[in-house]
Image (spheres, rainbow, N blue to C red):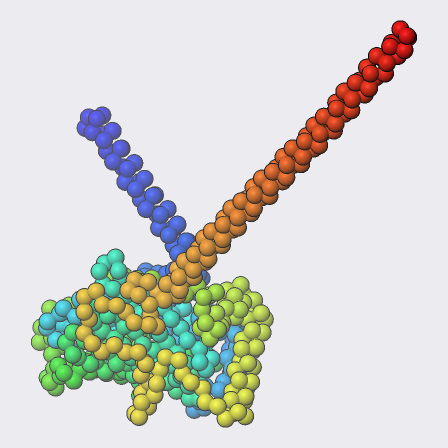
Length: 516
């Protein structure tokens, strides 16, 4: 190889390295400057397991003040008891609210991007199932429970797909009931022509060595695809914390949820299998896909690795339905804390989060207790005043379903305006407010500057006028003085002349007298 070729190769290598460096620097700068919450976060130890590096180790020994949650739990619970009223120790908390948990389903929305233009109904269902399986792996290793939301608490977030031409995905969640604890959620993407409305009512139970959060029968998700006038009814699996008394704590997703579309007649029966004591593997998934009650595909795999779908008669023709390693992450934007409402999750829990992230359990516990006490006081006040809490974003229908107040059920129109409370297309409402605030401020500033300028000009003109007047007065005074002086001088001159004349006549008369 010639030296010229070597030089070119070196130059190209340098160019590539420089490009990479500038790209990385630019990326870091943008991420630092913008208000982005990126999952996975490389800096947050709570979310390190979100890096996709094969299977995640779910077992973990919790290091708390007591070294375990056993004593904290056993004082309060009996087998079969509802855990909703049980206070968990602070060290077991994940530093975010349960309301934010639903954003995990929107971190990977790639399968939904082409859903509205997919013609085959089975393909559409497979894409929805692919998206559904992506929502379970974004949890901290071991067992960590998010904060129990305060009654009336809300969470807002958006994902911006404007650059790729896929619009904006918006998310609103609200704690609509305290007893029983119900969290309602709504997500939409007008450009991709879907919206999701649902609620989660976790019925928690203590089962000896496990604590369960039962969702399958008590929660629901309604996925509406506007482009095809389809509604997908989606159930959620149950969630278990194992090893509460004996062994290491670990989380397990179990249950038999169903995904069903009435319009296409396609039903997916899913089994999140529980690991047996001596055999079996964690996070295993099995299932069947039916069309008009006829079995079409079987499903098998692991939701923290790969899931395949296949026809039992053609097992060799397995196709990948879900692959964790190939997932693409979206960045969730939330309003900055100073622009959030008093009851928005991150603002509400910021001191508790601060304590947990700094490993200061006493600090976190103090603020957690203060929040819970405030909630009790507010509840008692409402009881005494006989006032009902009015929900901000959701209404309950006659069937007990919580429906978002501002649903737009019309099909997407090109260049349509997005109505409140979400703001203009591409601009979150809190940024729009901030922009208008700045504009108002700058207008006010320019108005003030203009006023100041006018006042200054007026002042200068007044000063000039005063100076002119003073000058004129001085000139007049000087002229008067000069005139006076001239008059005095003239009078003096006249007097002198008269005196001279008199003296002259006296002298003349003296001479006449002398001659005589």
